[in-house]
Image (cartoon, rainbow, N blue to C red; front, side, top):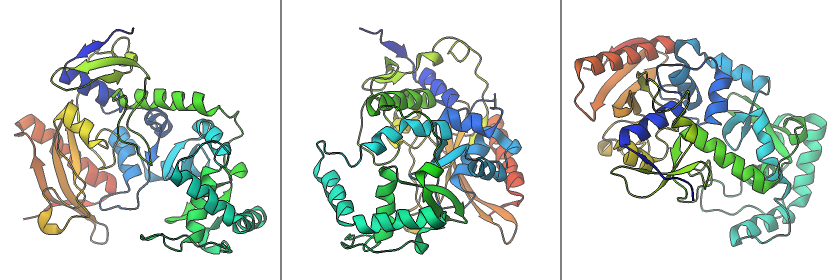
Length: 374
């Protein structure tokens, strides 16, 4: 039986911060960041800046420009898969499951329904592939809707036949996002987008994804709620650990216990402003357990019910999440307005100075003037 590592909360927090490249030792470039984090989540909201750019900036600082991300996508160093940008070489970890998508193995009721719906619309699927083969890359609005069985939903996807069929064709490894024109995705045949790397068998690929996810998180739970997007759990990757004052067991990447990235190494603290979708805080339960940090994205709440703001950025200082920044970027006026800085702990003079400097750096990176409301 593997040794169970006993960690203090500060130990666990420092492991998580170091794994997410948020110490004072900044990484050298964008691809290094994404390969360590395993992905950048895409989200259309840009109250301050697009989430993927905020995540990159919070690691790289003023050295990062959005054109770096655009170039990496154009060069196919990063490839979009299900609203996440992933290193091109990592697509081999997903293509085995894609190949098995339409197989005859056991499937739950939802998977069986999807298979049956795609089979019922095989004519449309083949029409889409034919159009892309001849003319791609194309936006979805230019693809034919020849579905025989409409997609029925109580949500916004009702009768969005091509949209849903493309989603399932991505899962089958038939089509892929070849790029974007503004916010609009451009679709092409997957064989013309994905690198021709050897496909890794699904079971082996799942274990490797768990291993890489743990490397990116540093410390994580074994199991948790099933998520349709990027999981926050890591199975049996790494080694078991317990965290003082926190119930349950964790898995920790041993690389963060010993060696060049280990706990005995100096921890260079700094302030950082994080995207609401940042992987350090995306798992709200983990953030509460390890950082004692309460957070919700409040854009969907009525204004009167918001505590921290429409798109509040979590504030990291060293190994603590210390507050939230409520700010808005008005690009037409050329101003970044700070509505409030919510302090979860009383800011010392040094902490306030570091946070204010990071806010000023954010405004400079956005090429906006900094203004405080009131």
